[in-house]
Image (cartoon, helix red, strand yellow):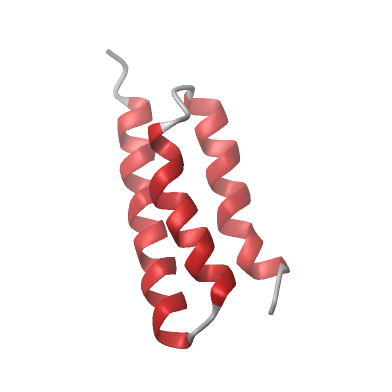
Length: 67
């Protein structure tokens, strides 16, 4: 068993928790949804490289999309 997907999943899930809490307190829907996405997607992406790409994209969305 490879440890990299597990560690990447923990990293992205913890960042997602931060986005979720920020979005909930500020009433901002984009960080809230990205936080939920960051916490959920590691369960469905088994490849480490794909996980890094998807995680980086989800982390960048709130920076570029302002509602």
